[in-house]
Image (cartoon, rainbow, N blue to C red; front, side):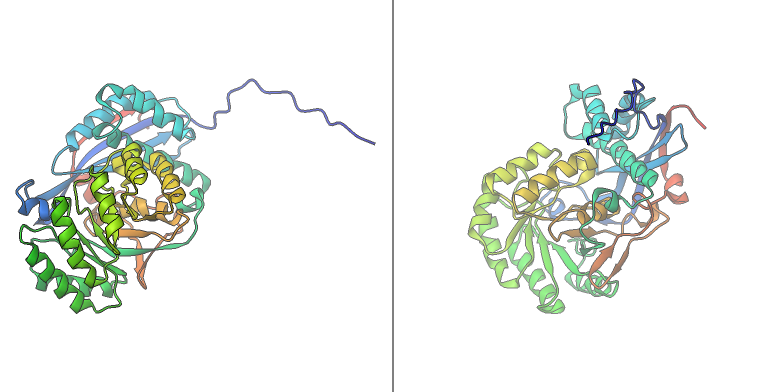
Length: 390
């Protein structure tokens, strides 16, 4: 006997769980203890970096849920991000925060006349990250678990101790302290006008670390194609994990030539500001280790699209900067990733990510697991709240 159970009557009410009540945007300037120089400074293309501009977004809902996200800009662009976010944020008021992908598209089209990459999408990124943080908090889960974690920790390497403004002796001392803190790998900067000095520094650090410690180098886009090929071949003797940004970020063909010619992996992508730009690298076979930056490409919504493309292409993943966001995203990537450790952002948050045995551990705190410090509030240079204020 077959029994048919009638379906319940279809509701005509919208499936809205909550609504966004307000968005608070803060422009925060983080001062760095010392001026920072990479190869772009030594080639005369940029000045030393003395501060980093952050855009924080705090989203509050009618039900009392809150999410926090951030984007950033180095040397220039911070005020532009804040201004753009302030213009498009009113379009969020009254929307259901669960619909993150739809809201990303809505915000992009609200400001599409200035493009769908660069400063405009970096502004949207702060809001997008806040919406994902809110979504995970409402579920009572760390973001990595909400996305579907493949691991509870990720391999990590340090960059902040390897810049070119410091002597090679200081870089070696920094590396020793880094390893003592439980961080697994060391990345140092190269790309000086004198390639012999680059090789001297790499040799000194490799000899200091020994053969068992993962070592990476980063030329910050300062080589032309012949130089990149010549120096990279010399670098292969040091058993590097990867050679990063040997060429201009948009030179997909040049990177592809290097990737085909070298045994050492080629890493790049951090300076690109859209999924489409990264897709060009993948299409050309120009990269072995993809290095997307969620705040730069538009947030977590866009990062997840790119991660799928990278996985289909069998690529390694090593997100750039912003470890407070990227640890979660890397933990949800199917292939074993790397996450970049920077201690620059420590003053901005009340929490710390745990590092031990060469790995960075995902906390059990809901969402991103971060709250803004009083110091971050003190460094705020502009602030606006859109919508109702509690």
